[in-house]
Amino acid sequence: MSILVRGAAPYGETPTDVLIADGVVVALGADVPAHPAAADAEVIEAADLILLPGLVDLHTHLREPGREDAETVASGSAAAALGGYTAIFAMPNTEPTADTAGVVEQVLRLGESSGLVDVQPIGAVTVGRKGTQLAELAAMATSAAQVRVFSDDGDCVHDPLLMRRSLEYVKAFDGVIAQHAQEPRLTVGAQMHEGEMSAKLGMTGWPAVAEEAIIARDCLLAEHVDSRLHICHLSTAGSVDVVAAAKARGTKVTAEVTPHHLLLTDRTAVDYDPVFKVNPPLRTDGDIQVLRQALADGVIDIVATDHAPHAVQDKECEWDQAKPGMLGLQTALSVVIRTMVESDLLDWRGVAAVMSENPARIGGLAGHGRPIAVGEPANLVLVDPKATWTVRGADFASLSGNTPFEGMELPGRVVATFLRGRPTVRDGVLAAAVATGGR
Image (cartoon, rainbow, N blue to C red):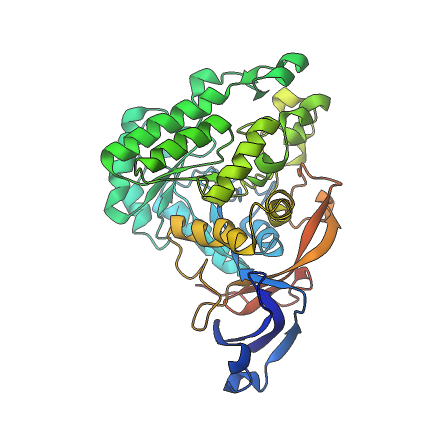
């Protein structure tokens, strides 16, 4: 099967023709007509569209196994493809926990069965994510899933000795520990960011220092053992300072920010709507400005969705009883366009770096986040930068509808997504016939 993407602008630059065959880019520009695959290629007209490497999400909650009422690997994969993603990393807070080779291989197989995106499992750091005993890290690393990222996300690896041991352990296979930075003793009963709004609303505050203290500790531990550390969903200006200082010392630390922490503030809690309850909590406008600049400057390496679907009963209830989390896969690119591209903080090459190239590199995922060049895998996304759309959670592919952007008009529309040259999304909808297949 060959496809000619005609007139697209790679990275928003000079429009050109891109010829895809056998899962790779086989010709560009003036070389396209002479290539044998061009003769019977299906043509996709892409004038005024931007071509980017397929997006990669290092932080997705798929809920399966165990909470298939909120999401499945298949439904989450569909949401990812519609959002322009060709690969996602599945967090291990499932039931049972993804802390053994058997569970991570189950998630891998479910992803392969869906065939919409590459689903790369993340393994838990500790057994059951309980923070008391290291999980089978080597077994997961050598399993069919080839796990390289480990996290207890949803909970912090708060024991410094266990954190040190995990950092030491993963060096053997160039793994990375992705830390959920939350000092539990400082966040008992916390409901939202500690500040003016929490005081006004009478809710227990979640201090910024609870995040910053863990990041500071773990940067020192990573530096001490010379291992790789990744900070999940960094959310405060103080955390940016800590990471910047650690990077300046040569520490092997990377960090992510979520789309919702780039756009929404703690003021959304004023009506006590639990759709805005998230972990870590939405912070202040001052934090947002620092986070955006840090992403532009490279202190924060990537945008990760922290896509966290929840069943209706877990969100449509009192704030203090609601589970934290928001949908993100189908809105992430649009929020980045709104916050970073429209403000001239990132160009389209910058978007490709923080939403594709860097997350693939951090996660060790070959074949994704690659340049748009001859011989490279055709994991690609076509974007209409001039289109706008209104967010409706009920229309999402996810089984859940807990989007904080409900009713908001956002810029940018995913027109097509290609997984190894095979369209998974066409004209903004899932391809009519999507064949299954492995990597």
